[in-house]
Image 1 (cartoon, helix red, strand yellow):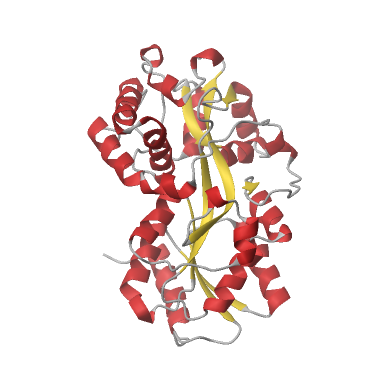
Image 2 (cartoon, helix red, strand yellow; image 1 turned 180 degrees about the vertical axis):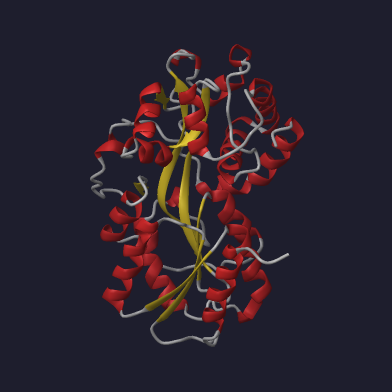
Length: 341
């Protein structure tokens, strides 16, 4: 069978990267990125313009990039892996793909709860409850646990239980409440499904708005993207739904991240650390987050996104991201046992 267009593109870009010797190159930085937001292009351009360092970038799916790094081994030209979600960063870390970074600037600017010895978070998003105002009462959906209650039978839409966004949420439940309660919660969700899991977060929001189901869980940036949309159907959908910050009376709303790690065999280590430090700068933080309707991780950054601000303030989960990431394997096992495919 002929390779897909995506894989052909991946191979072509990888060939370009590998045509440069994996030994350190002056003024070069090689990035493997699974963060696919067009608005990030300005980040790369600004860094190259201000430093003179040329960025070679390979975009792809997380699994493909991780497998490529493993196969390339010591000969890999890659310096950094950028991706979204703690679960995905933990997979790379658990495979020994990252190396520790020593940077006073990063340690000072990135909160301790949002970094590990081998990777750093640079923006955050929250996993919130979205419900149909005509089908579900707000008081019914004040916590993640509420979605597993019998009163919502046939009302819940969710994306796959194997998706990292849900695995990270499951890891948070495990960290706070234990594996047994996390599995019981997953079983309750499955019992309440309006349909088999399918699609992404935007699909779940649209299904709730259309009345196909009454409630779902979504990352905030998908909501804000629809709120800022010029498409009439998106604006109509947002009028039909409302948002709840879950678990405000307990451990807080689950937070997820975009992040990056320095690869073990990085040939351009100094340039890579310089780029990581750039991502923690005021300029990059404002843009890194604003470009995809996320929040900066560095305190004091002014973000001019009134639509995101309109969602209001909330109590976030303070669980250290490294602790969260390490529980994702247990979350997958619990979801599998519960039948959340």
